[in-house]
Image 1 (cartoon, helix red, strand yellow):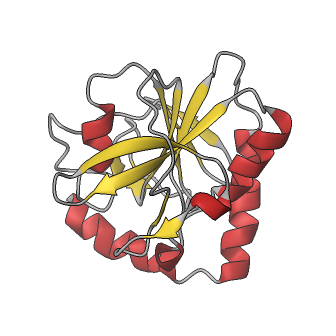
Image 2 (cartoon, rainbow, N blue to C red):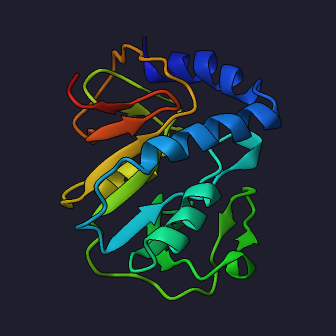
Image 3 (cartoon, one colour):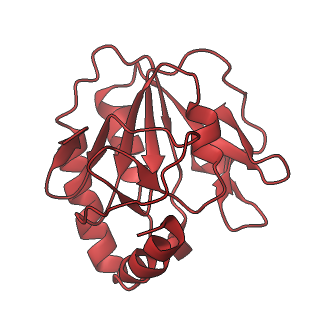
Length: 188
């Protein structure tokens, strides 16, 4: 199935989850996340959830990291929709975030991180057995991940593996994908 068809099929399933179910599944994601080896991670990039898309509540992971791995610097994205590029900003707290025109929380005034990032937590709608993902189709994460050496981990509320027919040379493979029930290591 092509990516557009996958979006049309999977996104309504995720959007149909109740807020309570999203919270429950995100708590299960956190339990899986806690099993990761973070010993070599100095800087971790994590997306902020888009509530209207029923994305995982990554603030649970951020809060857990701040308590249990305070030494890890957390950076979050800020998207430029004109260039389809992202910048990465230090997460200082909820007070530093504002909703942009696309209803995405961003840190408009936080300091930019330009150094290495050892782990990137990537949003997705669906993923396949080889670690390719279906996102929203703008290519922000594929552009960001091109040519950098980092561990790439997807977060999915759904355990469904899909067949992606139109993977192209710009698509970047994930190393792992965390779901509520397990962590997939690619290729499977």
